[in-house]
Image 1 (cartoon, helix red, strand yellow):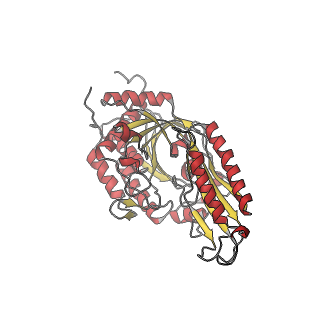
Image 2 (cartoon, helix red, strand yellow):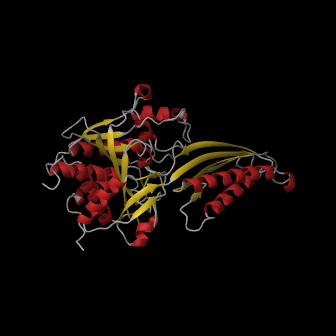
Image 3 (tube, helix red, strand yellow):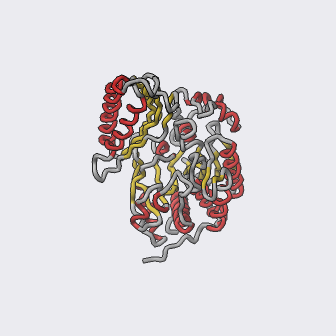
Amino acid sequence: MKETTAAGINAKRLHERISELAQIGKIGDTGVCRLALSKEDLAGVELARSWMIEAGMETRIDPFGNLIGVLSGMDSAAPVLMLGSHIDSQPYGGRYDGVIGVLGAIEAVQTMVEAGFRPASNIEVVAFCDEEGCRFNKGLFGVRGMTGKLEEGELERTDKNGITRREALLEFGCDPAAFDSYTFQEGRIGAFLELHIEQGPVLEAQGEPIGIVSGISGPVWWTVEMTGFAGHAGSVPMPMRQDALVGCAKVIVGLNELASQEEGAPTVGTVGSLSVFPDSRNIIPEKVSFTVDFRDIDLARRNALEEQLLALINGACLDHGLTYTIREDTRSDPRYCASELRAIMREQASEMGLAPPELMSGPFHDSLTMSYVCDYGMIFVRCKDGISHNPKEYATPEDIELGVELLYRTARQMSLQKGEEGS
C-alpha cells in the first residue's frame, strides 16, 4: 500500500488559521459560540475574508450574509466550481464544525495559486451564513438565499431576545431590500464540494481518518405548542388537570421509542428545546412549546415515522385535554452525492494511499440545499468519539490534513483544462 500523504497543502498555515478563528467567540479552552449574524460571526467572517484575499481571491458579502471569495479561471463564463461550508456555530459548540470546510477550501485555493495552477473555470469559496439555524430556528439560510429558496416570513423570524433576522442582517452590514432584485442564475454553479467533520462515530469505529459521503438524510423540523390550563399545583386533583408539560413528556418519550423501533436503521428523533409557561414550581404548566427534529436517509420510513408522531401528539392531547399547533420549520428529502464526484474522490484518495469508506450523513449541511442546483460531493473527517455541537468536539491535525489534501486534489482534478489530464 502507498504511504498516506498530505504533502500538497501547507498544514502549518491551515492549523494556525483554525486556532486563530477559534479565539473568536471562545468558550473555555476548546469551545466556540459564534451565533449567526452576531458580532462574533461578523468578526469571524472578516478574518476569513482576509485569508481569502491573502490566497489571491476577490471577495464580497452578498445580501444573505454569505462571504464569497473568487479565484478567476481561464473561462470566467463557464459554470463555477464552488467549495465551502460555514463558520457560524451552536451556542455551545466546537471549533471544527463547518470551519474546516471553509478554511480547508481557502487552503486548497491558496495551494493552487502558489503552485501556479490556473483552473479551467472560476473557483468560488463560500462561508455560508447561518447554516446551524439555532438562533432563528431555521437553518441553511445563506445557501437557501443564494439559490433562491427562501420562504415567506423568514426575515421576520426572531431570536430569543426578540431581534428579527432582518434587524440582524442590517446590523451585519447586509441589505435585505436587495432580496427582491436577486435571482439565482440556473446553471451558474457546476459542482459543489464540502469538507466537514463527520459528527458521528462511524469513521472512528472503522479506524478510518476520512470518508466519502454517499448522501444526506432528510430532516424535518417542527415547533409544537401544546396548551392546557394553569391551576394551583396544590389544589387541582390529578384527574382534573390539563397539564401541557405531561402531554409534552409523553411525546418526548414516544418519539424516542418510534425512532428506535427498527433495529439498525439510521432513523433519529430529538426534542432539543423546550419552554414552559408560566414556568413556576407551584403552577400547573398551561403552555409548552418544544422543537422536534427527525431524520432518515429512507424517505418512506421517515414518512411513516411522521404519521406515527402526529398520531402520538394527537393522542397525548386528547388524553390530557390539550390543544396543539404544529409549525413546520424545515423539510428536506434525502439527497445523494453525485457518483462522478465520488469516483474522482476515490481516485485521488488512492493516489494518497487511502481507500476511504462511503457513509451517509445524518446531519444536514449546506450541501443539502446545493444538491438541488448542481452535483455535490462531501468528504468527512473522523472526529473523536463522534462528538460535535459540544466544546469537546475534536479532530486530529493529521486527519484534518488528509481531508483538506483530498479536497485540494479533487478540486484541482475537476479544474483541469481539456487536454491537460495525463499530459
